[in-house]
Image (cartoon, rainbow, N blue to C red; front, top):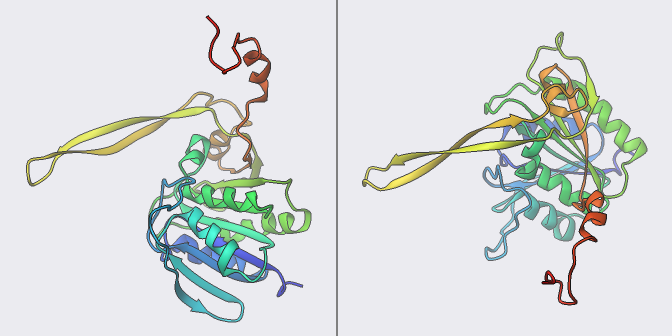
Length: 264
């Protein structure tokens, strides 16, 4: 049964990232693995797709239980290509990551790692995005290696609700300090961007994006940022439906004409 299980793996840090290699090792415990990942880093690409650029697939590894393909596109490009062209059947599971850096709170909307997981969930594939709060190319993924298999086993056994995926973030702590998983909601907050103005060797201005996250609910123990700050790995269930159902009745109070514009 395990050899019949097909697991699709991708990421946004690129085909050579340490986090991807670690996730392949984890995924290989559960079935046949096909990796379709960006040729180069695609952090911050969210759910973007390539519409004007042809996608050429490079075969990196071709073995019985492991195939690895590199694609010069976005993480979502990789998932679409995999499901529609490269795979011999629909995957039983999709794993994304392990991302070098956090995808907690509002970072999820920018994340290529989660873009891949969300795209796979659109097809009804149980999907998990894994991240570690360490941007280093040589980040320590030992906690994920030890604790991700239990979560993966549960998802394989029980599945996930339709078009729901999981956003999983691990803190950077020792195993003795680690407190295990905590199921959370997404923290409410916003990134405050700062653009540092610089001058290039030709005397021309350019801007370098920096910034910091402003947490609007630092004491909320049900939120993922609190969990990570207190040495838990956060699990946030993510849905595709962006509709704010609580606002529908409010919008129905708007006085609109037949063309959908405001009535004078």
